[in-house]
Amino acid sequence: MTDFSTIYKLSLVAVACFVQACSSSSSCPVVDCWFVQEKAGRGGGLTAPTTQEKSLLFIGTEAHSESPKTQQAPPDISPDRVYFVTDPDATLCHRSLNPPKGSIKKPQCEINPFQPQISSLKWAAPLTESALSPIYLQADWISTAIQGLNKQLGVSSIMRAPTGSKEHDVVLSVTTKTVSVQSRLGEPVLLDCGFWTDPTSPLYGSGFAVEWRYQFRGDGRLVLAYDGKADRLADTQEEGATLDFDSLHEKGNASLILQEAQVRHSGTYICTVYLPYLLAQVAVELEIVEPPSLSIHPSPLPLSVPGQILTVQCDASGFAPLSLELSWEFKDTDGKSRPLGSGSVTGHRQAWDGTFSQSSRLELDTSKLDLGRGGEVTCVAVHPGGTRRASMTLNFIGFSTPSIEDSMAMVGVALVLYGLIKFVSWTFTGSGSDEANKKDKKEK
Image (cartoon, rainbow, N blue to C red; front, side):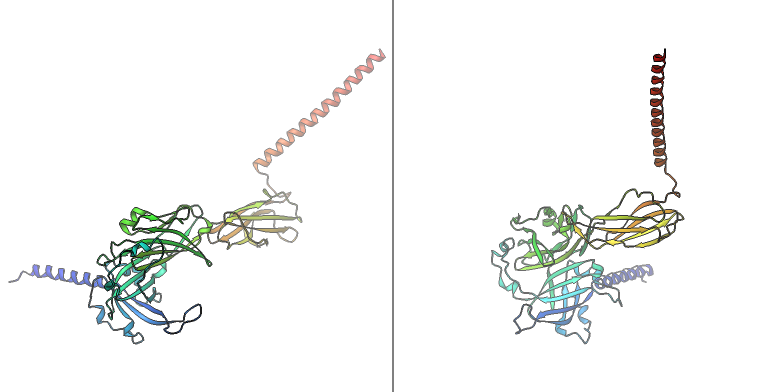
């Protein structure tokens, strides 16, 4: 007779194994993509026309998995555009690439044909000095570029399949977890980039190269290039930019480190990783965001008379980017606030360090504005880096309550005046006595 407890335990193990198998298979997504390629035989012009076809990527971590192949593609997708991808590193199984069922938001995915080729760049050319067997390169190659939900992940992969097959293996993956980065001025910045190479590929261990380039509004420059095979940096290295070379060789960590963020660093950074005949790249957007510093002039505001026109200026300086909204507010002695408008706003001025400044001038016509017994005038600056405020107290003669400093100053002035009066009085009194003494002597 079979022990019931043993059967129960075995059933629990079986259920646990089934759940684990299902969860591992379901953790990898089916990604909707666009297959983009140039139209054949239609050249000419600066930009070649392209075609777009709906595609699907069935992703798994184990080779030749049968489960996704049993699924049928939607009728609007050609069977030739359904790909079965094996990714042992599970990079493509990231949660940001697998949205909940029924979700409107989906990862952005593009597939392109890829042709292995030799690089002529001096930091990547040494990778192909020794000829590689053409048998491995004679295959169907594609490249994929995928961006996860909410920009949590960007990944670019090079995949290989035997000729005529739709079963692709990931050979090279380049990823970034900082698709979009913001930083304050003067702070160190880390732009994430990492890569993985299939250890079963003949390309594994043949060397690599890393390149970082900067682009902004049509302008571009090389930031850093490193030949990993020769362990050598290119001569054109930008000052203040470096890599963690130990982590690069040990873990494939190609992250760029900017030691001190400056306004000129805002833009797009492209991380490219080279293997022999292959390359993949990801883009990182960096924006330097520095809120403004505010000051109000004159400071302090002078005592005003009801009916007087008072001019106040607010200077905002040291901010980036240049998007800024300046306005004024007034808070009376009862604590009630009301807007006073934006005043007369000047154009932007750019400083030597790339930051911007802007001013607003406000005319307070106390004969038209009901400012009561006075209150607080505030300059408000709304900026992507945050809202900043600067305030000054407005007092009217006859309504103001002197502060401790004002009271001390008034006492000091009174003492000085008293001393002057006493001195003048003593001087005149003393001179009058001398003249009377002289007159008495003459009469005698």
